[in-house]
Image (cartoon, rainbow, N blue to C red; front, side):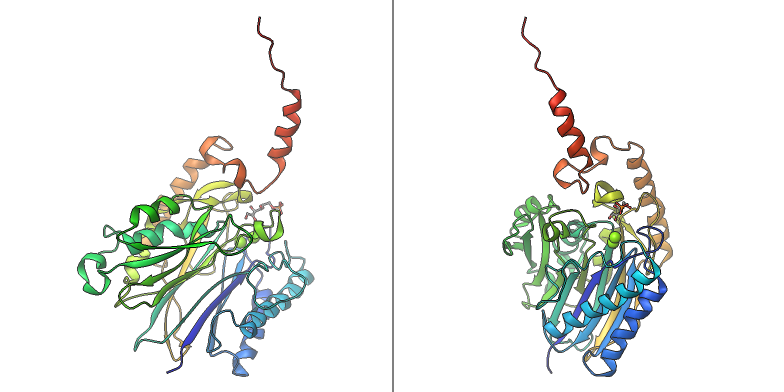
Amino acid sequence: MAKITISVIKADIGSIGGHIKPSEEVIKAIENYIKEAKARGKIIDYFISHTGDDIAILTTHREGLLSEGIHKLCWDAFCEGTKIAKEQGLYGAGQDLLKESFSGNVKGMGPAVAELEFEERPAEPFLFFAADKTDPGAFNLPLYLAFADPMYCSGLLLSPKLKKGFKFVIMDVSYTKADRVIELVAPEEIYEIAALLRDPERFIIESIFSRETGEQVVSASTTRLHNIAGKYVGKDDPVMLVRTQKNFPATGEILQPFALGPYVAGFMRGSHWGPLLPVKRNSTISFFDGPPVVSCQAFCVKEGKLTEAVDCFDHPFWDWVRNKVSQKAEEIRRQGFFGASMLPFSELEYGGIVKILKDLDKKFKIRKKK
Ligand code: F6R
Ligand code: MG
Ligand code: MG
């Protein structure tokens, strides 16, 4: 059987009332465009959703990774959506489409991408994560815990198929001339992996492979809009695909670390630390342009055809988590601009402070010694 590819491409092309959510009309325009491609047989199946102000187009097809045809289809769909967003006067219409015209694939053009190509197992469950008001480093800790820590992934102890561990491919996103990556294996190199992942603004997990079968299990987006545009144009709001079960961690082992609500970069003006709040599908953004949110849809796929999506964070357990994580959000917001609440200087997404400090610098005086 030929391999299938799952591609998820997402962009913020404008939203209602600030950076809250895209309009129904914009989503419909995108859906119609993609539906037509399915009717033509260009793609096998699709799923459209939004998380905060970002619209994600998930497609299944047989055109492989970084397919020009598939990427152009999604780019064009976002352009169609942008037309409506402009007509409706949505805020930030077309903001993630950073290049004038399409060239080759959407990498480096603004939209975030995650793709997996594989030979389907007899049953093929997978998860699709999308986060808003944060950046790709937000997935570092959940992935580390789910793939390298038996405190979270019991399968590492209980299933012989997981015992060999996993290979992590980690990207240094501070290097902008080309992709700079390192491969490290768990469990032997977990300290080295942790040493990199503790700095989520620079080192980001791009993919994870099973050492038992060599198969790719995870694909996550690594876009840094800041590096493409040279200035702040919005947070990088990542997407991720994770295959689950059998030789891979179980769905529940992948989900468990999200109950931590780890503090991640993003929140208001992409310049604060806030806890990552697990939310339901098609959620909006609210408190302090946040908190940073993550959604997760579960599917099975057969010969490229998708089941309906199951909303993983739509369960009473996650209501309880949401209350706890909201408390974390409120707690850190109490200290406003001070210290650990705001991101370090290098990560601030707006230039205001830089200007204030530059102006003040001239006014400092060196006191003469008596
Ligand atoms: C964060 C984000 C928002 C905006 C904020 C100000 O990723 O997009 O928090 O930074 O609403 O937006 P502007 O500067 O467009 O008024
Ligand atoms: Mg946005
Ligand atoms: Mg967004």
